[in-house]
Amino acid sequence: MAQINLSMRDYCETIPHFDFDGDPLNISTFISSYDSFVQILARPNDAAFNSFLFRAIISKLKGKAAQIASVRNTTSWDALRTLLVNTFSDRRNELTLISELQRLEQYSNESAIDFGERCLNHNNQPQFKVEELFYQEDPYQDEAAALDYNYYYPEEYTYEIPQTEENIKTKLPH
Image (tube, rainbow, N blue to C red; front, side, top):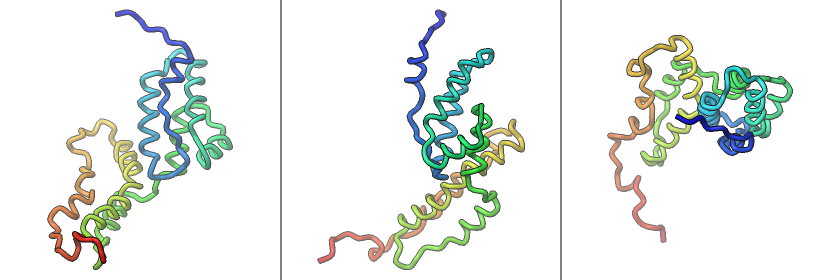
């Protein structure tokens, strides 16, 4: 198989365009995008090239995330990843999240779909942190035995909730 040689410009064009501004809802996407990027492109014995890749990732940070990365003067993807997770991810653990989701109740004037969306928005934030903590404890854990996060998604909360006619708007108000 022939080896493909790409220029620095070609590598720059392969960098995913995802500007992370510190929003906790976006951290999981940002981290997983760049984990894949670094895993594919990093060169174990080429510190200069790896530094270039790291600077390309740093250039994608905006707002608070860029300020924190600059103040902390991180020099590697692993250090930046840890800094972003520790700074911007939700600090709730699995038990706290489960307890909070169990206490959520559907409002009297709220449709099942709106309630499901509210549950999803409540659940989105800590998912990355919970997964991160879970897999750090046992990185060789079989995925089938891992927590089934789908259990906590709103589809489970709304699947068997009957929608009455007053909850479903079928006509425009006069």
